Image (cartoon, rainbow, N blue to C red):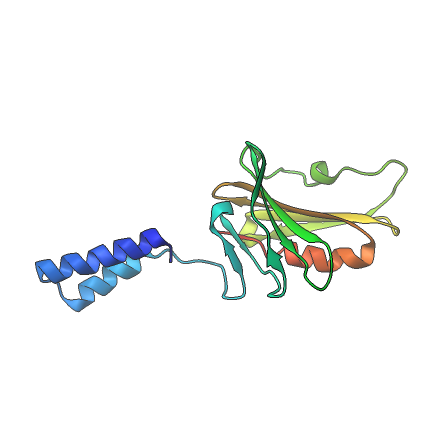
Length: 171
């Protein structure tokens, strides 16, 4: 529950105390203020980005970075594994009809491409692997823009990254 929801619930209870409402009325008002979230307790909630994602507990969050006026980056240092996991929120982008436009195809390559939907149809993912290397991209429509998670590298490392990116849910 956000701070605004807690304040609304607290105000509702305070008004009932002053005005003489029943306890049931206070409970109803407080529960109505809290929207249902698809995020599970295993998700890390990123309020500023408008999303949640399942980040391993050993990873360390880095300060958000605003690379340009239309993109905000959130990253986690993979403690014990090396490298950084990054999720970007693009405020001026929308979910493309064709995910192939997000990854392109390397020249002279004939990759194996798989793709699908996530987040109840609010997002899409694509994986393109040619045997030596590959790229995965996940895009989810969120309240603050298009939430994107993309990784490139050796095929054996892409599967874990794709599964992690696919845990992104909008708030």
